Length: 341
Image (cartoon, rainbow, N blue to C red; front, side):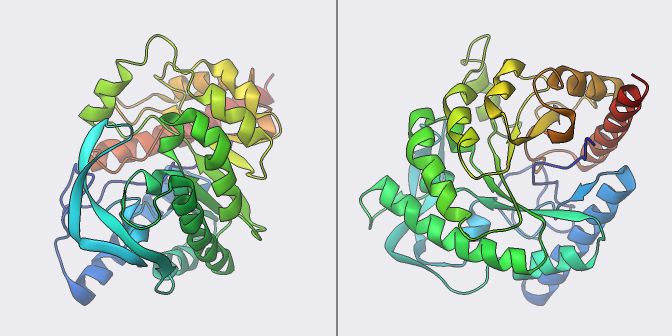
């Protein structure tokens, strides 16, 4: 009950890459970089285990960016001639690669990371992939001419990698779709349909993470414009409830999301964000337990998984460590309270 996990990313150590950045430059090259990525992954596996988390991730230590870590192994994408493009409905500008030809995987994408993670923990493991709608929103299309068609092409590639990750021993495969909170009607329509293509043939647990973004200034500024209630989930949750996706990861703590929206996910496991990634203030076990208690009004206890609101990539490493400890201690306190009635 209340198995704990992270949304996905964790801060990279200063000896691996630049810190406090979403697009950090690596500090090494070649074989030295591969070893540094493994060392950083091992560090965070132990940190999660020491904190007391139940489901372990690789912290995306081998990826420069949660989307582009996948795209780097896809043919048909031109990284040499990036263009400036507004993403997430022009929330911020980014230099993005261009899709210039039919998409095709060069081979395995995350074999090293998944197999290394599986070999170094006996706990359940979760592995994250970018969702097709979010990928489409993060590249420039100079080939398909249709967002849905391109999303389905990416979904087919994601499915290939997901099936291989399952064979690597991954217990939970999560697709990250922050774009679902930006293009809500499209998400409920073809976004969920593209996700269904991603999970075709999978027997492991499947999940989708829908957030309001990292704790960076552009996202924080956007959130101030969303009003007293953030009801973006209201449009996509009913579509997900009807889908084959088994788990949904959402924001809760320090969020303006009305918690009763979780009722729209009846029949699904809910990864409830009990840790704020947009604040350096470390939650107490009491605060985490209280958030879990509020969520229990809308989510059955056997379906509630305490989690972080979003990834922690740009966060200070020491603060992230303390937040992981708070996550585990808060879940333990919630279990204790439920057991004692």
